[in-house]
Length: 195
Image (cartoon, rainbow, N blue to C red):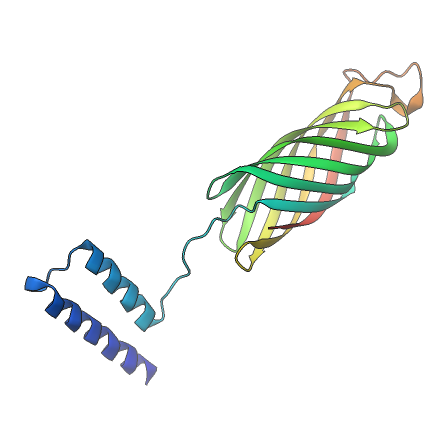
């Protein structure tokens, strides 16, 4: 029954459009309106396109970086964004383990619809507060799955991997163990929310 109603509605819309337009030729605005009405009648209506790159984010990291990582998008395109991020928590590296903090930038690109894959190369500067007070430059890459819900919200699950390159300080608090130029792996899993 519904199929017959949809077909009858489609015929009615086409007839009205043909009568309203001389010689049966609709100009572009009328053709767009007709396509929209036809899509509604046949049940093929798609939600309007929306920006898939969220503005705000907060992540919980577990691994060699275990803490929180808030982020804010400065520049947003349809499928990518340039973000600034902060970090606070524990840093557990070859240079030692202590409380730490940091900040940096990350470019995040996504591919997909409601369920999308995101990749985000970035670079941070991280500081150990204790245990040698090591400072490191940390180029990393995020690889994640993002599930969108509502108009802007999303849940993210992923991995953050890269290296920490020592800039200054000492490893494990030892006077003779300078970290300058040394490298440590950085691998953490994370989950977060986006809005």
